[in-house]
Structures are given as C-alpha cells and as structure tokens.
Image (cartoon, rainbow, N blue to C red; front, top):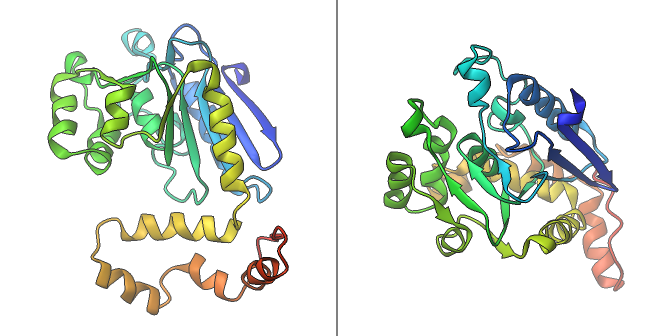
Amino acid sequence: MSDTVLVQQSGPILEVTLNRPKANAIDNATSHRLGEVFCEFRDNDDLRVAIVTGTGDKFFSAGWDLKEAAAGNAEIDGDYGPGGFAGLCELHDLQKPVISAVNGYAVGGGFELALSGDLIIAAEHAQFFLPEIKVGVVADAATFRLTRWIPRAVAIEMLLTGRRMSAEEALRWGLINRVVPLEQLMSSARELASTIAEGAPLVVTAIKEILRKTEDVSVAECYRMMHDGEFEGYERIKASADAMEGPKAFAEKRSANWQGQ
C-alpha cells in the first residue's frame, strides 16, 4: 500500500508523490497514508518544506476515487484519516509550508489537495476544475477555500459549472505562483523549496501561524493580537537564539546558522 504514496527526503525538503496510475485518484487507504506522511512531516524538526506532486504527465490527481465509491467501498463522509481528505485538507496545525507541483489535471479533490498547500507551481498543460456539480457531491474544501484565492465571481462559476481553468488563466488570477514547462516542474519546485528552507525556521512557522489566525480579522485586530502575545510563534522568536544569530550573521557578512531555537 505504501507504493501508492512515494516519499523522498532531500535534506530539509520532503517530496510526496501520488502514485496511482492512471489518474492518481485517492481512495481511503491512500488518504490515510498521505495523512500519516504529512503528520510525520509536521512532527519532524529536521524537515522544513514539503512538495506534493503526482506521477505521470496527465494527472496531478483526479481526486476522490469515484470507482471505489461506485463499488460501495468509499463514503462521502468516510474516515479519510489524519488530516482529512488527502491528508492535508484538514491538517490545520501544520506550521510548515507545502508546495503543490501540479504536473497535469488537478480535478475535484485533486484541486482541493493543491489548494490545501501554500504555493502552487503548475506545468504549462495543467488544468484545474471541479466536476462535483456533475456527479452529485459538494467540493467542500474548494467551496471553503477557492473564494479566498481568486475573485468570488470566478470561484463561484467554477463551483457551479465545473468549467476548466488553464494554468495560464490560473496564473492571471493569482491562483498559482508559476507556470513552467513540465520538464522544469520539479526543479522549479525544489528551487523554491530550497529558498524557503534557507530562511529562519522559526519565522516560517510564525508566518504560517499568523496567516492562519488573522485571515478574517482587521489589521487593527492583528496588532492587538500581536501586542497581547496571541501569536505563540512570534513570541518564541523574540526569546530565541536565532533572533540574535540573524543580525550577527548580517553584520559579519556570512550565512546565518539557524538552530530553530
């Protein structure tokens, strides 16, 4: 079963690859495995950034395995394991960044998996769409998230019609960060991951916490929360050795030696 999810570590970067040809659809067992992998990523202090992608060049992921559902082996509200569907959609306490490297069609739950990360890099031929409206289910994670990524009118159209969005259109709307040729997809994702991993790990954690806690509050409320010490990661930085190391390394014109403490 572990072969359906391939895992490779390169220093502080974890690569997670869906491996269920032809469409990289996600059944319950695969969702559970993804949850285990992302929880291990969350809890491993040596890992700082994850990349999630799919095998092949046609599908990033077709999402929920409809064939399993039709056979009665998967329920809409079934147990998807830790982190919810695809191991990431409900992993709300993950304080490390995830890059979605979309190598083809991101369909339904596959699109939701990509949205559950923090940054998206897509191959030129990639497409994003939500066909749930045509199969009688709700794309819940996309319904929750898509209007936070792109204009409301565009998001609602995608949800209600199932229309396809090309990688170039997704880039125009700010849904994704980069569009690259397929052969450059993973190298581009790794380059971005390496850049992030070079940053102060406590700061990366604090940024994710602050973004999560302030998504729906005013700037004035953000400052109140900061002054009242409600951002644990921010408070940790102020008392950390890394907060001293950064300025010292800058003054000495050298790379910082981050300790994460």
